[in-house]
Amino acid sequence: MLTIVASILVFSAIVLVHEYGHYKAAKSVGIKVYEFAIGMGPTLIKKEKKGTIFSIRAIPIGGFVQMEGEEEEVISSTSFSTKTIWQRAKVIAAGPLMNYALALALFIIIAFSFGVYGNHIDYIDENSNEYRAGLRTGDKIVSINGDRAYIWENIFYEIVDPNNTYYTVEYERNGQLKQATIENNYRKMIGISTSIVDGNATTTVSPSDVTSPAYKAGIKDGDKVIKINDVNINTWEELTAEVEKSIEGEPVKVTVDRKGEIIDFSITPQSQITVKFNTQLEKSFTTAISSSAYKTVYYIELMFKTISQLVTGKLGSDALGGPIMVISMVGEAAESGLLSLLNLAAFISINLGFMNLLPIPALDGSKLIFLLVEGIRGKRISADKEGYIHFIGFVALIGFMLFITYKDILRIFRI
Image (cartoon, rainbow, N blue to C red; front, side, top):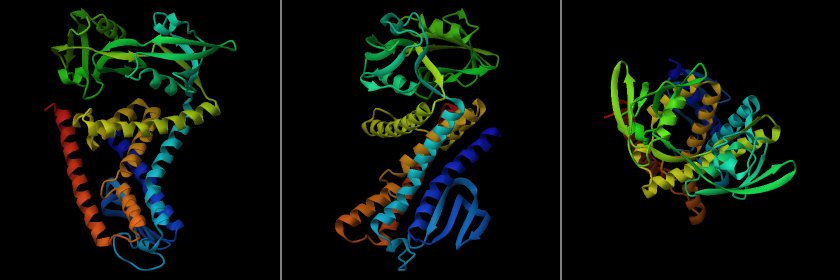
């Protein structure tokens, strides 16, 4: 029930903000809006105000703003089709841009409410390469690989870049600037995440994602790891320590208790870059604003990287998730607390904004392309032709969504 309620609230809020962007921009340039709807299907609630019907529909997925002259040729002063290219572009782009604004606002709320991990070292592992290079608790990280560091995200994502085997850090101690070149730390991992009980990590696990060695081997949510290489395991720390002891390139025997059934798995660990220090929690205005802006831009860049990897084949369809996977993620985030739910909502909002700006028929991005073509040729493509192209794109998107949903179902049942 928590998953369903949280999912409806998150999706409705994100769609509401997206459609409000279209609505507000349309009204600002004098376009008549027939209906502002949240959800699809039969109307549950509706209210008319100043010539616009505001409605909530039965299926809590999607929404729309129906404008005069958007889908048909209407010649009037309040028609979408009679507005200038820039005015129409403003209306189309406003939805995705509002999604980015929502994400930024959520990150700012998180930062001011819960704090932000800044750039002063709070803890450092004495067995780490960083400690051996001279870093100590209290040092201020100034830059990583020449890029200014203000918050933990600046530091972390630069260090774990898989294209680098080392990094250069500039740090400040007692007013003096120092510099060090540090080899990456690596850890062996089998791709599992722990379940937290009363604030403590347990050996009840779940696969970290569908590409992890643990998932591919058959580990399922709720499996309790009881042995690693026949060594009894009682804590998460013992689990990770035993995996770390494994020989490079050789499989690890993982024994789990699955609802009373004892099952053995053979899993070959992967090496992953790890950061063996963390930074202090701060609540300053500067770190709150800079961290929020950084996260928003970072996730937009991540969308570009993901699309690029999909196009080049570096990522397969298994890396994609549909509605079922997203709903599952929302449920897990809701159970973890408000902080996790707000972070996920911000990420989903960025995702929706980015996807809508892709030049795919039926999406906002393709409508902007049509406006660009109109500007170049000096003549608008007929509404019928544009509508037909968008309809084909809509059908293709529905087909793609069904395919991704099918993949989600296969993941759930491990088919």
